[in-house]
Length: 336
Image (cartoon, rainbow, N blue to C red; front, side, top):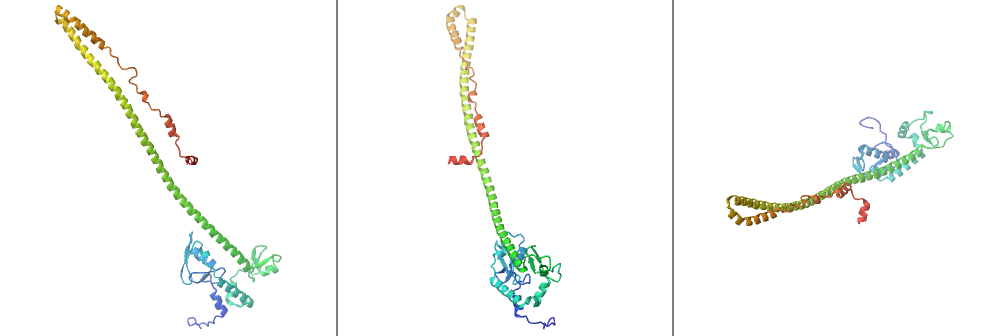
């Protein structure tokens, strides 16, 4: 008798105790294969473990954690999730032996816990007293035994419900595993794309820096060449100016001498007597003729002031700069 409730407690039979040991702590039903064993040595249906894992890691991409419902141990999973846990083949074999023993003893009809379980199973719509226990392979739908014997599925091919359930569940599990493997490939591809984007940005920044350095070098070369050409223009300008200024100085001196001689001749004609004038006239005439002959100096040649020969032809360079472009792959191979 239970002291707290005052009710009579019947001791568990060996089969009931075994069924309790084979019950999943999540769904509270007998383990559904495949059964996985956790690092803490407790067992779970892999489907229940997957539900628990996905509830704890709704946005997982690789790996994750969940707690064992029995001992609260933190289970750390890799990128395969619960499909990376080891199956407990021993527990699965015990479940098979237990079910065979129950079927041989007719325990399904006498065991109260299984009766309660059967009462929760869906019933046939046409035969309300019959539970759905077979699967029509022809119509691809669950049905009951009465429908197979007397109903619309009497000419159809049927199979045990549990067999079809296991088959379709295994197919679904395989599809889930395949999907998980596909997700791993997608994650690897995404990671590769992220690395490629990062490298692309780094290479773009590198090429922009190199392009700036190339143009800075061109600017420096052009500025240096510009200075050399400007210096050449200035040098020729100064040479011509020196020649012109020297000629102008000679003209100035000649003009000064001519002015002085003119004044001397005028004074001689005004102040000297006739005899004195005649004595100095020959010398004065020679000086006048010599001064007149010096006044015939030639000036600069026509076009001497022109600097057109120092003009710069930039059409070819302008065309080259306007069509300047990046090197192509073929050009790089030819240079190698």
